[in-house]
Image (cartoon, rainbow, N blue to C red; front, side, top):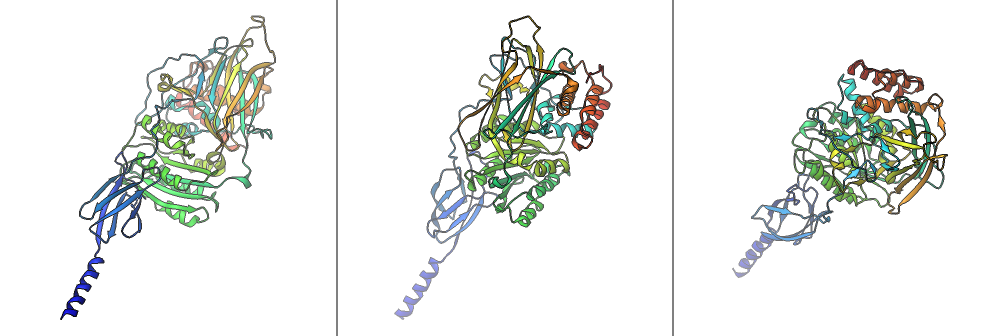
Length: 585
């Protein structure tokens, strides 16, 4: 009897040791946003588990109570006792240092110049940053000015969307530097010892007789295709209910399908979505496994709210987990910008992105949609995230941004690039930078400073200044052959050292009719932008002048240039007949 009793007791003890309990719970950050893919180490067994795509978890444990260690990139490791009798609601705290109040970034800056603001201009549910147009500046008092070198092009395709709809355009949606960026004017290779080539031309101003136009061209080096670094791309896709329209999520799925064609085996792509929940829909995958990536893209569907803040945090964590030292680490955010959960203001979202910027991860923003499109949010995020910004109005634009101009969009050759230009006040009476207009809120911030931009491989930027020349014999002329001195400041990616390229702009005047066609075509774009903004600086010219200028300087074989001429004609019909004068070209 005794041996049988001992056998029974042993049997019961064995099975009690194998008894299974179930530990359930969720992991959140300090802002109450659920955290997906948190590592959960169970001490009793040494097994490693993860929170799911929604941030929740369910773990079998051998004891009623146990101890777990939770860890996630960007968060403090947490060790705590847990019980299967209680649902666990666990908070992980960020390891990121809270930055001091951020200085807001100016697109252009003239030292010591005070600028008066104006009231905000809005249209429907779409939001645009209220801008103050650059005015004429006296060169004697303020000889030096500067502007950020950027590759953003979103304004052009957004303007095209409005005109194709037969609609007028919010003036603040027209950013002339982005209209010019859309075209790659007369690219030339930089010198061997520099990342940039600089060129300038001085000509007559076609819309203000007596004034001059200074064309300043900046060409960035093209990456050698054989030496393009490996990419770590995280596609952060808005799959909220507002994206359930043909020109939103379906367009993005088509766009990302095109992007997959450019991926190499050394590249890694992940997909994070936010909508009803934040989820890692595709774990980091080699660019060689195109079928798997395309299937994940095809499976995306829309529904739920828009927790953009939580999505951004999750995407950066995934990007950091796969960080490639010396590689191209980038989050590509694709959305209509309509965030409605978590932090939603531009200021708070800017602070969030700035925290992650020091990780060396770039941010590209792709905007889509209409009606509730938040241009202002995406523009702010891209600038603060050390990245760029494009608007996709159709599949052709997606193909242009993500296939034909893939290296410009995704691979940076310079960071924090900005240009200072000091005018020769003995030749220049007044000057006006065309485009690069600043936000009203930024101008009113005493901490504001010029913020440099990211420059992509092979990009060609063309900046225009309208100049009022100083009358002959009115002052003693110094350096008669130098109109202005230029300093281009930048850093190479992953290199903290500041670099500078210097250039002198000549003072030789070229008749407008003798200019290279690309510069005359650029003038038509600047005039087009001024007319759309109803600028007081271009009210001496009209739509027919812009059309004539574009037609006489365009390449008949260039589809983009011919489309632009058609857009001017659409704008002329929409805005009606306006007073104009004959432009001498």
